[in-house]
Length: 191
Image 1 (cartoon, rainbow, N blue to C red):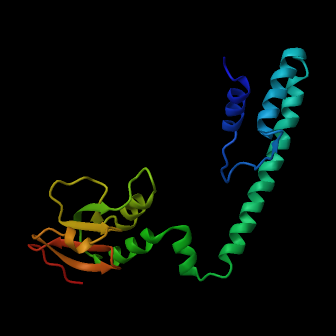
Image 2: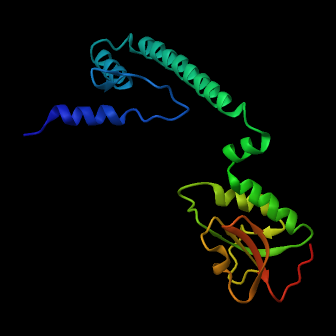
Image 3: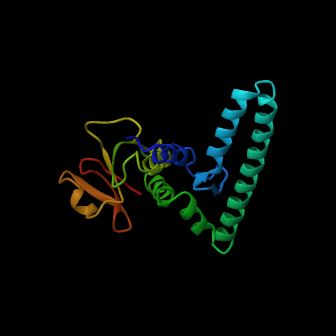
């Protein structure tokens, strides 16, 4: 026999997933309020087709109000969190360490152009950090194009980063214990 209560409960629970751009709505009788609203719209559409648009518009306006209030509350929480921090701490919290790493590398290689390869502890499905590094280093180190024979290795957030440098490369800049830049030994790099 099918457990209808569990099936309906599962559908209602999946109707609402929290995101900062949505409004946080409470559960009513163990179901999210948004699920109840959808059910109400459906039932009203079955019995009174002429008034459904008016009701849907009113509900839409109410949700816009809830969403605006939720975004305002998220903004206030973020502002309270950021107020006591310095500008560098705020950048690190919001942008992440990749931006500082990219700026560091850009300043190290200013005036040069290298074909690079990024070796990172992050995957693109988890975070946007690799994209930020590519953006910050371009055009001095081109990580956007995939080169089979790179001139420069950019190693970011990898344990034992020094051990990942091949013998035909030498380290030119170290950023913390887990990040560094290395170029081919055949190339000269004057900073």
